[in-house]
Amino acid sequence: MSDVGGTPGGLGSFLLGFAMSCLGGYLLSNQVMVGSGYWNFYGANTFGITLLPMLIGIGMLFFSGRSVIGWLLTGAGALFIFAGVIANLHIYFQPTSLFNTMVMLTLLAGGLGLIARALRPHRASAAE
Image (tube, rainbow, N blue to C red; front, top):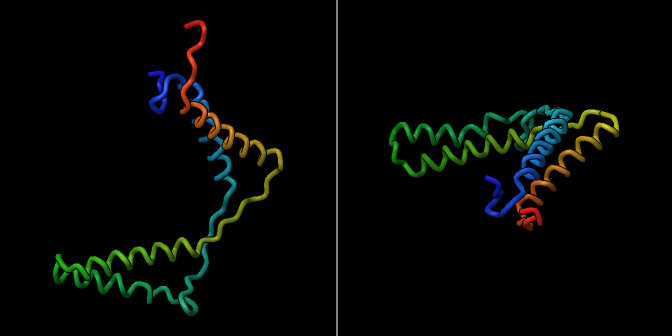
């Protein structure tokens, strides 16, 4: 139970680092606002044209469920729509104090450092 990552020792460091990383990541992501804009694809408000490959693929799959082209069009269309949604997101960091920002980043970086240290093998102490 005390082995972390297949190496002896480090369970305490790993758990503390994991808790610090989770807290720092939560606090940091809590300060981020995400919004979206209009979908632009070679023109203004052309989201509908990006649905065509997927809709054609779905139609082909209803005609024949084994259609390789239908599966490719459906998968590529869904991927294209997903990529377009991600590309049109606007991500903003809300204003906060320097102290709060330093606490968030210290918890995150310190926790990741403790996790990395826990994965390295530890020497047995003299008391063991």
